[in-house]
Length: 347
Ligand code: SF4
Image (cartoon, rainbow, N blue to C red; front, side):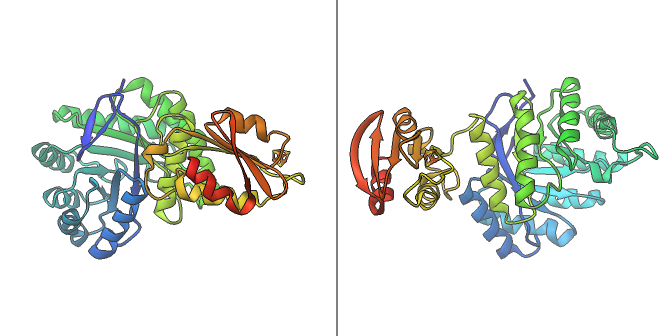
């Protein structure tokens, strides 16, 4: 089991549920826009949010942002350790340092000293794009990511600092999986999982689901961030779907629906979309009262009754109509126009 750390009120590692993180895409200096986005992320189910700190104005803005949001705030620091000091002084709940661009021991020592005083953790966040001293003429090797992180951790430990979380992100799923696996054999610090620069939603979600999912299946990973070029709420929804598919967390009901084919005689896609947007993991707020239930929405009599009977609530559709099942028993026949309303009622 990994060591446990705390970011604001969220516990990470030590067997606590895998938490969901995201990062704002606003200019952190624009406090109203950043607060707005953090609130949207919170509504979508984000539990920890990171903001980019590119200058002192951004680091100072943490104070004003924190007054208006509930989520723990992580300051993302690169190049200048003094930004970390400023962010911590202004109330950051965690600091992410990149070992590729903040590596001088005297600078690390100052950040560690202040983090210790304020009792906040540090994420040692290595990215394949900012590795120092990579072997020349070769592609990226997993050791190139893992070893510098282990060395960095030794520096922190020598300073008596153990409130550490680690990420080792490469932009392809396979290298990322290898790096995390190798690291987890060598260290018990909790792990923040993600595929860096995974791309737009269409490919990024697949890469993230493979990379993050494979690791979580192996029991590796304590908190996750799906990185997408796009709306950050999509990152949170994808993260919720990954955790729910692995049965690690429950954010809403499981929807089982057929792909439809030439046999289908209702607009099943529309029915599923309406049910999903109302109560699925995609729904903007958690629906804990229906979390974990199985809902089958099937297009015809081929697999429909079988799946509908197995689910908690199910519908097997026919020509412009459907039969609703509850716990395996038929409870109602409904016309197509009433399917969504009636299903929601039973759900
Ligand atoms: S349940 Fe019926 S409509 Fe749906 S894919 Fe199977 S055969 Fe086609």
